[in-house]
Figure 1: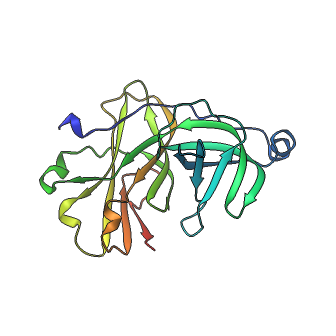
Figure 2: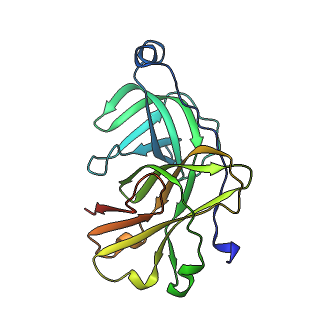
Length: 218
């Protein structure tokens, strides 16, 4: 297997609140956590996100400077508290936590190379699409070696009205360890330029019998 095809992810800590609901509202107020897109234009660092694929994107402006080095278009996990409604779909927020996630693009693979790619299992928690992004929350059995995650499509399946995607995971011969929570977001805009009506996603998961998920494209 050609290692150049693997996109390595590291285990990254996610800062999550663990207080009960009443304590959360008393201490923090109402807060949200979601995967967002970063923007670094003339307005300074701000974020855009969609709660679901059918809702308009909101633009979020931090009330205080964010010191982390972030690139334009990068996807991150943001925890925030709304502070002020500036206009419809425009809000000022207080950033409570900002965490790096695995962010990549969809890869087109030659048909004769598909069987060479790893397909190790993982524990899928959720998968959702927002605009040009396919997002996943999952667990991997991690010990000490970096795992790899790719979103791919077989170039021989690009015709037709269904975009057929596969999530491929490599344990990299990592010994058994502990279940670690991970997030991934993949940019699928390149293939969305074709007239597809449906996305079919294959995931080799251990917690459900079914392996396929479907999303309608707008």
